[in-house]
Length: 204
Image (cartoon, rainbow, N blue to C red; front, side, top):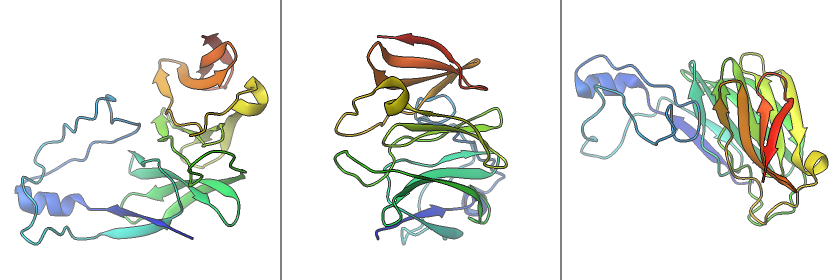
């Protein structure tokens, strides 16, 4: 089985090189805090070491996948595929050590092209984590414990005909709403109550 290795380079290195205190921004969703792919931290490293290497603080093996991690409140959330077991997973790691704090596994059978794992970046908001798997399984987790708060199956509940690339888009939190692409007939875009999973509206 192929593995990705999730690496974290600590602020200790940044402090040494930049010569001052550095406070890391959370990156709780695709595109960062403001979803604009802009890194607004200060006192960060101005250039890489001459050998091009940063000190490795920890590494954690994870399975196949295309999604990037979300980082919030000193925790890292990442999704992967355990191909041999036939499971998609959501992992919560300690950002300081890489230790797995909790994980959730659910069985999945891929019927899409490039069947190498989830695509959608997790979203962390108000003590919850939202994930969408490649086959349209959406979960809302308690960010601390990993308990499932609510879940949706887009194919079963909205009769979605999955595109060949699977579910890719990351959801958007706006107030009480969790808005995401679902792809159903008359329900291309759906807004859910982020706390309960109740559908608020659908469009297109």
